Amino acid sequence: MTRIRDIKTTFTAGAVSRDLLGRGDLNAYANGALELQNLFIFPTGGVTRRAGLRYVDTVPTTGRLIAFEFNTEQTYLLVLSDAEITVYFQGGEEASLSAPWAAADINQVVWTQSADTLLLTHPEYPPQKLTRASGGWSLTEWTYFEEGGVRYQPYFKFAESNVTLTPSGTSGTITLTASADVFDKLQEGTRLRVGGKEVDITDVASPTVASVTTIEDLPNTDTTIDWQEQAFSAYRGYPVSVAFHQDRLVIGGSRDLPNRLWFSKSGDLFNFDLGEGLDDESIEFAILSDQVNAIRGLFSGRHLQVFTSGAEWMVTGDPLTPTSVQLKRQTRVGSVTSRYIPPVNVDGATLFVARNRQEIREFLYTDLEQAYQATDLALLSRQIIVNPVDQDFDQRRRLLFLVREDGKFATLTVYRAEQVAAWTLHETDGVVLSVSVVGETVYLLIERDGTYMIEEFNDTLYLDSALGGTTGTATDVWSGLDHLEGETVSVLADGIVHDPVIVSSGSVTLDFDANTVQIGLPFTHKITPLPPSDVGAAGGGRTVRLVEAIFRVENTQALRLNVGRGYDDAILRKFGGEVLDDPPPLISGNVRVRAFGWQPDGERPLWTIEQSAPLPFTLLSVTTELKVND
Image (tube, rainbow, N blue to C red; front, side):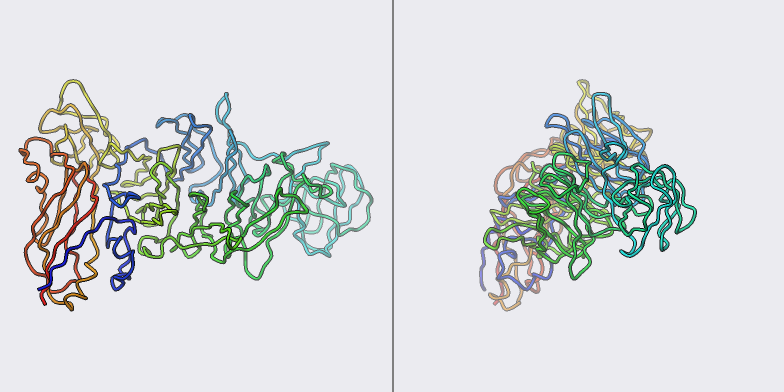
């Protein structure tokens, strides 16, 4: 009979796929687990019950969360919902503004910020500018630089190059006659450039005839192929993505020009005058290659990074000028096309969701190759990355938060220098729709039974959609729970786990008086380890028995454990020697548990942890001793 002693000191490979069950030779097998749910992973190797969610507010419809950081002291949460933007500051609503986007279209809104201005774009809506000033908040359409009535916005000839226009005059109200169908009623109110001079379309009589008012006198009435129309309009669509780079406003693609880039004049963000190609003047070009390259996102990093539907590109030039700019394709992964999922920066790398929605790629420049690589960070945890819809990075916790289409969310503990990339899956009683990190606070938008709630992670809470309260005089009635009306909630009262109660008229009545409570929806954390990798080699697949397990815990009050005899809820009480009427003991140290019974093979985990008690839990390591029947 063979005796095996194994020490598991780290979970830094996270929850790995079942595909690794036959790969006991990998470091990920030794450092991973079969299931990690509702846990945060420390970069040092341990795991802890995730923070609870504090209820902030209820919003009327589905939407999206966006961060607006004016400075380190003034950070705001923006909630984009059906035809509305709501601004929150320090957990309270500060302002509400009418917005153009319908709820169904919000998932394609792209944003970027500079100082007190947030720019927002959508391919079907005029681009917007959200501004915070001393007088309050305002949302307005973009206005391009004008001088002498001339508007310096992007222009493009959408018609074939040989299509001509013939003007009836050179000034005032005139007609333009086209050699092919080029005009549409939606173009009324937009501008053309004919022979380098601007005119305003006032009326479209037919697809080939339009009335215009001249902004600048035309040079002559000759038929010409030298004409363009404004690139962005209700007829041609609007910008898809936007960013700031090297003191220029960069527009990436539009509905009808999906693979084109526009750079404003240097230091003049809404001036797209191409001029004579001087160093500070506007830049414009298309991404042309052997595959479709509809631009899906821009990121200003070491270089301007361009994420398209089929590949990833870098735009170089130091500084960027019309003569120095270069575009180079780096990788061929592609980004999600059905919605906008913002790329996020983590330690100099840009994390983006691949087009197949099954990979999180790390776009990182390597000095050795003088190029970018796109490493898959979810290769060993493919079961967790299922149709992502939103993501953001929490710098304080060093966690990437990823929201899935099914309403669950995942976190990635990532430390590149230490080669830590550990995924865990999280669930809550509802459907998570969006995530945003505002300063040091992580917000979620969650649908619970048809109600849309904003909630924030709070390290002092152990329940979801929760509120905590303290009173000088102990009481058994606690109110302010209207958002949980009719729900069965868990209660932590003076450190004691109370029996579940139902919220009625926005309040609950406890079985005893308490000074401090937490009230909210329960969630369960789980740990299922991988089967021991050396059992098969030692025992040839014969029966195995766990003799003893030593769990090293830290500041832990609950350990619900199964070592083959069913779950035991009282392990820590036995270990701490406390009476049942007192709060559970806070344990830091080793908890030894003896086990009995043989398993027919070594394919099942030797132990599991699963508990919903709203109490702190941190596991640092596990030492197991087992016997294998030879």
